[in-house]
Image (tube, rainbow, N blue to C red):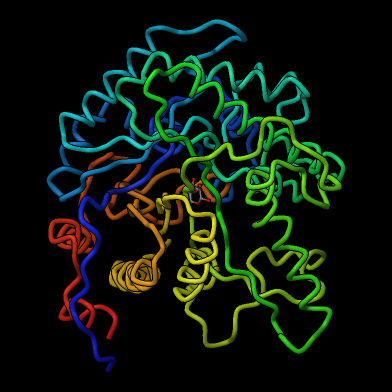
Amino acid sequence: MADYSDIRFPSGFYWGCASASHQVEGNCTKNDWWAWEQEGGHIHDGRVSGIACDHYNRFEEDFALAQELGHNAHRLSIEWSRIEPEEGRWDMAEVNHYRRVMESLHRHGLTPFVTLHHFTNPLWFRDRGAWLDPQAPDLIARYAGFMAKELGDLVPFWFTINEPLVVVAESYLMGNWPPQRQDMAEAMLAARHLLLAHARMYQAIKEATTHRPPVGIVLNLPYFEPKNPDSPGDRATCEMTDAVFNQYFLTGIDKGIFPPPVGQGEEAPGVKGAWDTIGLNYYYRIRISEDFLTKGAEYGEPPPDAELSSMGWEVYPEGFHHTIKRLAQYGLPIYITENGFPTEDDHARGRYVLRHLWQMHRAISEGADVRGYLHWSFTDNFEWAEGWTPRLGIIAMEPGTLNRKPRPSAYLLRDIARANAITAEQLREHVG
Ligand code: FCB
């Protein structure tokens, strides 16, 4: 058994959960995912998002529960297709809805962390070509500026786009998500437009507000490692995957360029330094062999003794420490905007959380400026193409009844959040 001692987090640390509109609100009928779900055959368990968690109507109840569970922050996304259901037309009733949502968060002592784009596109944006449309950056920036003008007084932290490279990979390279393209040239074009889109949104938020709130990007950075470190082929494929998937946005914004292979390092206008903070989504390690890109094994090749999630990816908390350290070199505050574990075994979720928090604390004590941890997710929800099968919530929710029932991991996180600390006892009990 490891020799643990109590660990404390920096004062003012943010604790809470993260979610996204389409996954929890219900009836997001005006976006591309909704339309795609209705086609049938795309969602692995045959379900649709439907009424989801009915969070659109039950946000008060959810925020009250989050408060009871010791949270002081909450990440959620605004559904662009509600705000701008037709190009250039703002739906003020929906703006007011999100105003009530933000007010409710504050009333419940939850600091809002707001994402403007979390995978879903309005139908009109899809019909114009979505991320292949050269106008895409300006169109989404107009929405970002509008939201910042409308809700700027209530939102202290803005995040532009969730996981842009996941969008590129799933929608334009692997063909898993709408519009189901498998086209390298399109993927590269989408990656260009997403980088510009982020920077224009950043600018638009700054221009729309007088207090110039911090704006960041949310990146999903898996920990890639060569399956066999002695194999030059494995190493080369791993480096290439990391360069595109993990490093493209970081270098792009840091230096204001389109890094290879998306570009040739030419200037990306207005992009340099367009971030005040980085949102990190960390879940797993992906071990890569030379044929990773052709093999179709999305989560790589975990070692035989690895612990896997119910979605098949490998638990690797050390990778969290490495990834935080990697981000720390940019000298910006870091927020953990997602970290979580799909499992039927809530005890395993608790262990996952503690092992990751321990690694996060290690990075903080080595100087990384991590200021919050937002667990994915609050309630079980619609997990994109996987449907309702993966259970990621600290709150169990049966799609039929919509009843919320906290799992033991919700109380574990509550105790940590309230104490802003983890005891050696908790580590011994849950990690062993
Ligand atoms: C992330 C997504 C989020 C959720 C989790 C499990 O990649 O941002 O919406 O699906 O994975």
